Length: 218
Image (cartoon, rainbow, N blue to C red; front, side, top):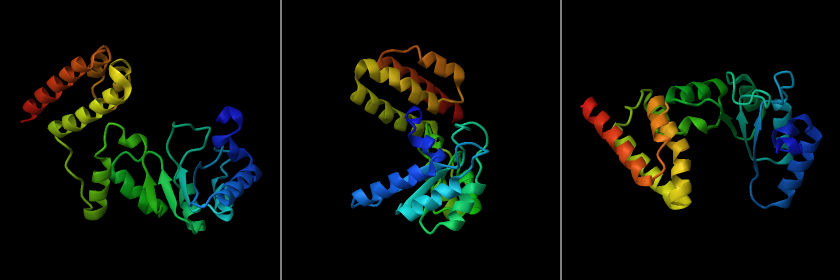
């Protein structure tokens, strides 16, 4: 997308952004939403200008990732631009970037006054994050982490879905990435798992790990 002057490359061409958004909104009968970054680079942080163009073009909601295109996914997320966009726009603004815990979510909502949150990588290997955030916002206290038994039950469903969708050859290969997210605190275990090529071997390996650790915790 970037090499074709599309995607976040458009941040350098506000007039083209306006033309595209205006054309899309006029061409469809459904609400159109948009996701942007805060700018092309820290020196070209024009997210607020692009956000105003989007609202004027008829965009109904805007998600903003708190990094520039040049930053990629490195460095700290900058929430000041998101807060400025929320303060200026009338349409809903959704904050995105480095929302990894319930406390992150609560603090970011308070700081930016955003209407909602968009969560991506923070939920990889932690699908309980949404429940934890909801609990923290409702009660102001952290929710107890899921037990290894619960984690294993969910991970099994995840793996069976991958095997069914991708088959017995590609399924286990793709599973390595997903299991790696669940086991990101266990690098040695992840390395062992990545050598397993058969679904049954993968399931047996993880069943042994989660069963043994659950017994140790008890």
